[in-house]
Image 1 (cartoon, rainbow, N blue to C red):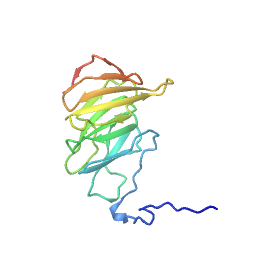
Image 2: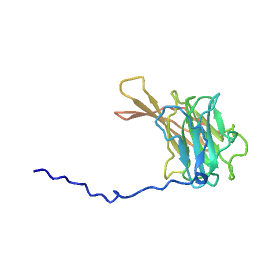
Image 3: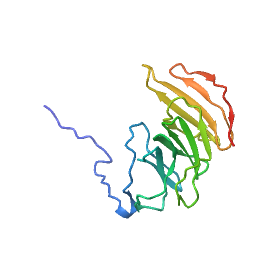
Length: 195
C-alpha cells in the first residue's frame, strides 16, 4: 500500500510579478568573460556592470535612478589594458569603486556624484605588484580603505590563492602572500608610496 505524500511548503502558491520595462536596465553589453565573479556591484547610489570593450577592460557605472534603455554611447570606466574580472564598491564611501583585471593590476576609481558624463580613464590609485590576474576583490567590512585582492593560479594541481592587502586611496601598499591549503604567510617586503 503506497500513499502519495505532498511536501508542505509555504511557498507553493507564491507567484512573481514581472517588473515593467521602464524600471529595468536594458540593452547593456555584459562581458562574455568566463570568470567566477558577479559582473556587477551595487550600492545606495550606483550600479556598476562589467561590459564588453575593445582594447582593454571597461565597466559601466549608472545612477540607480537611471533605468530603461541604456544608450550604447554611455560613458564607461576604462583604464585597464586587459579585461576587467571583478568590481566592488567601497562600503564606507559610495563614490569609490575598485576594479581588478587580467592585466595584473587593481585600480581604485572615484565616481562623481551625478554619475559619469565622460569616460573615466585615470584612476585615483593604481595598485600593481600581482604576478597573476586579479580575480576577486572584497573591501574589508569594518576597516576603512583596506582592500584584500585575490589571484588564482590554475597551473598546479592544488590551486594557490595569493592575497594582497592594499590601503587606498593615497596610502602605502603592503602585500602579504598567503598560500592555501596550509595558509603559510610571508611578507613580500615591497612597499611603494602612492600619491
